[in-house]
Structure formats: structure tokens, C-alpha cells
Image (tube, rainbow over all chains, first blue to last red; front, top):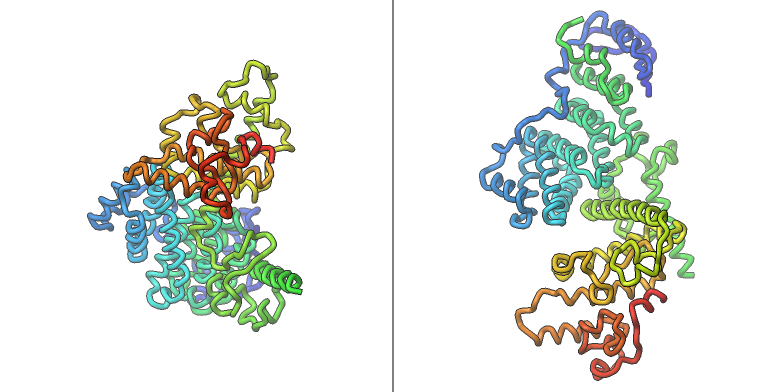
Length: 276
Length: 275
């Protein structure tokens, strides 16, 4: 998979860069570095992504139990022990509500939900929690445009949460097929011109693509292609977006081109602190 | 006339449904969308199903040749996931079953010594066909059968039954056995087996608090909804006779006094399989 951008004139961070051929090829690791160096010869990568995008997606962190109130924490522990004793619908609603408010909780919510679904399947042979969770998610998803208009933060939380569910909750070890298109819909929305102007939304877009991009592509590669056309166009043509945004988009373009993995050169370019 | 219209109806919806999924491939250069309205942009449109159904005036349910009945356009994620789960479970079952058949195939069997034995492997051979071609593999059929089995297994009676009687202690006449969804049966035969199985499971129903009266009412109700007749006297093979001495299933049109007294037909489980 290669992304080829020829003869483009870009304004990057206030410095006008001359036209050049910039080729990103997954098969030729030597290219990106040299091309990039010629593009950014005047101004090296202004900032590193090191602190923005966590390199390890599986970083072990303690469950953000503190984000939940005591009652919910207890409910959670009981549910993991014996799902039948707990009002699972209420629990699922509480978890969703908290996730929509608190982005740091969002990430842990995926693991918590996974644990609950497993517990219920194994101990009670029912799937009440999962069903309630999905129904609520579907409602939120349907109302996403209003949510976005009301609060960018909540919208970003929603996308993060849906992607987390897609990542963690599997059906017989396969991703939930019903979530594939909704996740794509969210990402497409994030890649639209108005969203690219907001660093929050771009952040979310690239983060989720790092996390679930590969799985999504396996399920529907055509939509992934289309999504990346939008990303590429945004990177090249959109005026007024910040250099950080451009950097984020460039990184994700390259990430996908290398087969959803970070090559050493890319690692060095984007994530190291040493300036060229 | 109406048939033709229905066909066209279904065809249109099917095309639209497909068209919406394949937006860019087939309609990339088109000015208008499938519903006739001008496209807003050349880029991919939002494919949120709900939004589409709100903005266009298309009905929310439709019937396609593949679906079993009217299908809602707005799918419920919960339902979809459960259906998907059932599908993958059925496929797992199918692979496991195939392996079991092939494994049982290899050593030669001595039928004479295995009659009456409750070893599941040996009791297969008389009815099972090792050849793959005679196993049911149609997904729609397997899904439907699995659903019926799930209804039965979801009951309190089934839970109590499996706790009470472990598999190796089961006896053919007395203990109900879940019908094998992978064997080839006609629709009627299968439905019959399911009914008999579920009736058999009632023996393990949790005890009713109201006492005997309720039991009798339940049995008579059972009689009304079943449209086959039970063998209540004689033959030892039918498991149902011990559970339903008071009722003989009749179709709704027969008079009340058919409940007591000799049923018109006698049917054994083996006969049900022959249907």
C-alpha cells in the first residue's frame, strides 16, 4: 500500500516549502526518510508525538475505579462475582454515562465491559449486559451529530468508547460485525474538513485508527481506502489546519502504509525528542 | 398481478439496499442517488442507516427473497450480535460434529453388542450417516433448528433435568434427548421431534405451588396446543405416555371429550423421524 503525493506545494508551519515529490511507500523504507528530510529541510518536525499518542496500546493501568462512585464500584464487583444479583441494565447505563463524561475512564471502560460480558456468559449463560450496552450505544450513535454540536468533548468520548467496545468485545473471538459500519461512520465524520480544524477531533481520529484500524480494514478495506483518501486530502489540501494536525495525519498515513506498524525510521522521526 | 408487483417491490428495495452499501463503486460518477435526489457531494455520503431512513420517505420494513419475513431496515445492534453469535456457534458445532463422525468412522463397529447401550457414539450408527453428503449443512435450516433448541434449553425444566440426570445415566425411553440438528429430516419430522422433546422435558418442571389442580390445567392446555396424538397405552418406547396420562393432544376442532379415552392415532418417536 503506498501513498504518493507528487508536486505539491505546502505551507507548513509558516515556512513555505517548495514543490517536491513526496513518496511514502510501505515497501521502501529508505524513501520516507529522505523524502521527508527534503521536504522539511528547513524546519524539522516541530514537535514530537511521543506524549500525544501512547506508544503502547496495551499499557497496563489500574482500572479507573475512582471515577465511579462507591455504589457503582460495589455493583461492579458483585456483578463480576455473580451477574444475576445485579441490575445489569443500570450498570451498563452508568458505565456509558461515565464514559461520555470522562475520556480517561473511557479507555478503561472497554476492559471493564469485557470483563462483565465474560463473567455473565460464563456464570449466567445470558447476555443481558452486552445487549443493554449495545442498545444504549446505538441510541447514542444515532444522536451523534446533535451530541457533536452540543459538546465536542462528549462526541470525542463517544467515538473513543465505541471504538473501545469494538476492540475489546468479541463474539467467539471475532469482532462485532454490527459495529464495523458505525465505527467507520464516526471516523469519516472526524475526517471531514470542519473536524480537521479541531485538534481534539484529529487526535481522536488518529488514536482510534492506531487502535482498531487494522481490524477495521480486514472487515471492510474499501471503506478504509475511502477514509484515507479523506485523510490524505485533508493533509495536502486543507488550509488553516495546524502543523500539529498535519503531523498527526502524516503519521497515520505512514502508519497504514507500513502495514499498521511503526517502522524504525518513523519511530525516530515522530516519536523521538532529538531534533534533526 | 399482485405477485409481479411484490417481486418488483422486493427487487427495488434490494437494489437500493445493495446500492447504498456499494456507494462508491457503482455510483461514483452519478449525479443522483438511488432515491432520485441530487447528491450533495462527490465524496462518500454518510451511510448512517437511521439518517437515511429519516431523510428519504422509504418504508422502514421490507421483504427480500432471502429473508423469512418482513425485515426491519433499522437493525438493532443487540439482535445482530446475538444472531452473529448463534451463527458462529452453529459453525463451531458443525466442525466438531464432522470431526466426531470422521473419528467414529474409522474403527469398525460391531452393532450387535451395542444395542441398548447408551454410549452416544455407538447408538449413532443405526441412524447416522457417516458420509458428509448426508449431513445437514444449510445455514438457514441449522439456524432455525438451533433457535428451536435454544427455546427448549432456556427453560427451568431443562436446567433441572441436566442437573438431575447426567448424560451417561440417560435411558432412551425415559429421558428426553435433544434432537440432532445435523441429521437430515423433513421440516415436519423435525418440528415433531422438537415438540416431543419439549413435552418430555415438562416432567422436570419446577413444582407448582398451587398443587395438583394447576398441573392438570397445564396438561389440558398442552393438549390443546399440540396437534398430534400421543400413545397413552401400550408400547414401551414412547417417553411421552408417562408424562401425559390425562391428555391426548388433539387439534382445536375436536370436541372436549377427546382428552380422556383412547386416542385416534398412535405415534412413536421413531415414526416421527420417518415423516
